[in-house]
Image (cartoon, one colour):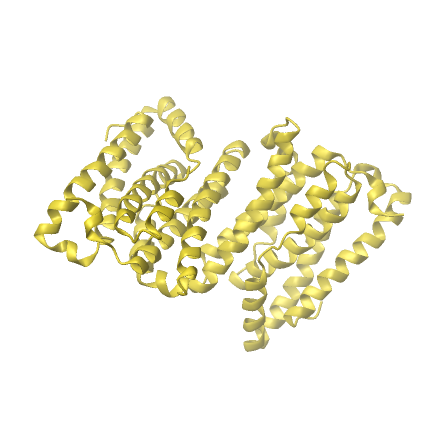
Length: 210
Length: 210
């Protein structure tokens, strides 16, 4: 039993993943605009470019199927905009942590979900989403800030715990409708356990308790 | 007599052009975030990606010469940030016009200035900066809005005239120092005439009087 047997609808998957990457790009672009120095701004601009490139790769897949990107993304705007707004953070470090944790979890999630897509698209999408996100600069900035400021570390640990809840809700809502049935829940459970484990590793890597 | 005999300093050129493209990217990313609908947001995200790609291409050139991007861009931060702040506009249409007109003029300018760079870099930089900026979507949005709203058209015409002044000042300050001499002014004059002509064509294309 695994997530791939859930077979998400291709257009649903592409529209949602594409809008999710666009949201990640917008969040990173805000982090670029408010970066405290040029070296960090430069590093973040690469990460923003990578999220944008994933977004455009998904848009290409939508166009390849003769669908309209705006139409396919439209159903996910309200939910994902609300998510991004709730997780935009009170300051630059919270925004950075959101980009890193939510971006990482959602990439992981969509990669897992892509296992259930048809063979002529699933592996290509998995490869696209699995490309390096350029988040080393986020990790480095967060690690340094947390090491130098215990109070910030505590605040970010709390923020990370809240983020994972909100992000898992987004992932949950992205599951095919059939999955609300109890039988399907049993299949989803291990996937979410895995997503949370990867999230915990990211938190640990920053020196934060998940 | 032409601008190429002015031979700009390579590092000066790369640092300034790179930070200028980063500013263009940030302005377009703000336009993405505040776009009125998904189709426009999608189109603007491509334009933002193209500015970012020009920026990263210039960063690659800086690294190829074993210089540090942040160090090379640093001298231009204050002036260009001030320029972007003055030209960010009172609303989304003004921002769009700024992205289109200032981005176009500065690309034109740096392409002309690159004529004076060494042979092993000038043509490559000119090709990079001459790549399609993906601004069709900006033109389309502005044209439509201007056609449907005479008052907006008048306001944007004024905004465009103010923009060209501020943008030419940035270009002027980007000239090699020697150019303040009267002899050099004579060489610069025709280049600026050409930049203004291209600006006027962009204004005309939008239905605005330059």
